[in-house]
Length: 382
Image 1 (cartoon, one colour):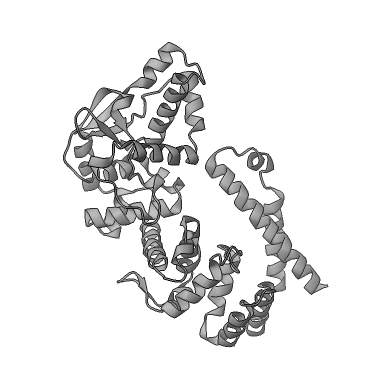
Image 2 (tube, rainbow, N blue to C red):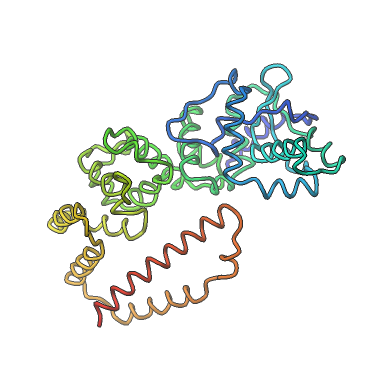
């Protein structure tokens, strides 16, 4: 982080003071990027304390997983080493700037104890219902961004991708800072990563406005853009991406792409968010493969569509143009086998965090996909 950015951050940190605050004076932040959803409007301060809004925030954070925090707090109490950051609003009320998950865990424990579902020792319970926090008394409207960037990065990388991208887009808009400056503040993210997130966010939002396919896009589909479109220049060209306006110009091709990758009448999409989809489409859309793309567009409309036939056709087309180095291919297969053979199976099986479970599911899908491809290729070779 450049020196002037550090000074800016520390100047704002100096506006914070330690203060004991009752838990019932603290309100979760409904605008927290961790619980963001497409199309969600920003909640003004005057509504933050509304019961329904707070209950929704708590439920969203509970869904994301706070059991690890609760278990720790229930047995060891609330540690103040990394204190929650609050800002005042209203009279004797505070909204969370940093630490929503911890406050959600504290609230859930308090409720369970009050209802007699659990019994928390008095000394620990006293430390739950009244905590020592850092309270920000400055006037900088960007304080949340500064703290998130200064204290929380690289933790931002573990957020769901859509909330991360929306967080950065909001920050760019509010702060009027360019990508270079944003990357300097969020020092755990490089300039290319910030650029990818911003491009993907605006592409996703444009697609959500499509009258035919927009309502089929949820945050899980964000990978269509940050893992597929913006990883392959040929796909950006095919869709007519305008980086200055942050918009696709070729809406006809965008509709095609969305029709292939979104759920239709409960049926699974023909193409998934995967490396196979990315690589296949990137090859199909180049001008020299126009005939193959035409065939692909006809076949994908059929019930018995088989994507593997197009992988094979692309492979043969490349083989025709470029001689394959068999020795290099054999070495590559050997190294791939070694990677698969040395997977940390016990560690993967025992994954219990939200991120660990998601990674486990992704590894399983990748291996299953590899098995399918290998069976097809074995059949072809034999």
